[in-house]
Image 1 (cartoon, helix red, strand yellow):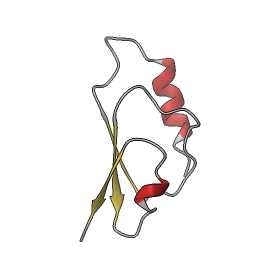
Image 2 (cartoon, rainbow, N blue to C red):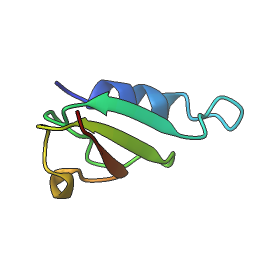
Image 3 (cartoon, helix red, strand yellow):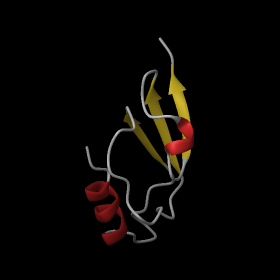
Image 4 (cartoon, rainbow, N blue to C red):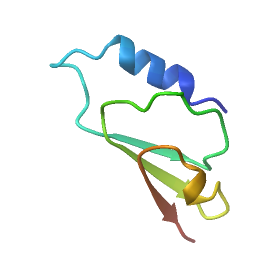
Length: 66
């Protein structure tokens, strides 16, 4: 999985009126992250067996437990 395309699109459309207040991403966390964090806050909802929190390069990881 690559998270880069979504964040690239977000950066292209980073207009004041169209920019989201926050991003909620449901994922296991395994994938390619963009090199630069977005200016919008990111909440990563991670699966129980997903990538370790300390390996998430930006945003706030929250673990979804079963």
